[in-house]
Image (cartoon, rainbow, N blue to C red; front, side, top):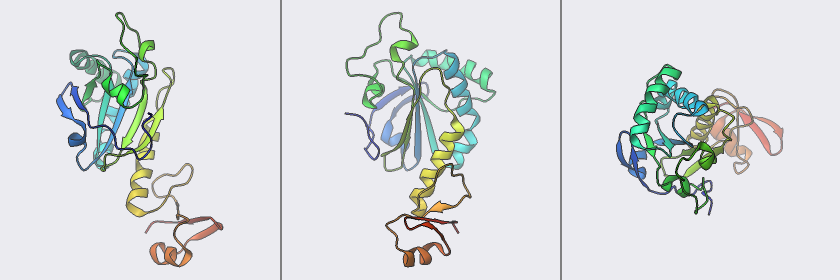
Length: 216
């Protein structure tokens, strides 16, 4: 069964280039992002890992840990990180999981249960392993995105989505289309006008079911 929004993510024991981790313990009381790739030393993936490395300070500001996943082994990951730093201009300090047995890929429903890694495999054998998962401190899946191999991920959007999730969780609001930090937010329909006034102050009623306000 597919992993769905608000499902608890599996508590896997994972081998990484920085040692063994147990996923729930590793997340702890922070947010976490898992982003996965079909193979090391591939062009689009190298640029993506570089982009994640460049955003290290931004992840830290948001109390968010980052875990890369690739189906190659620990030693390949260590060598690949040299290329990632060369391409991205930033040291990739986050761990990369060595998903050689496809345990992570299958647990997160990125591959069919019968999938395996053939000899002489290419990225096409694990093409669907190009996903982003944002996980909350409660260990529940908050958001997922899946990309094809020929379209690089926009990590500014991942960062924006993380901001939206954290704002919604901490302030009891929703975020509208194209929202960025500082923009007006949506008051949930479950909050009546009187309670909205008390909680948020002034708000604008665009439609009976759409009320916008600034966070104070």
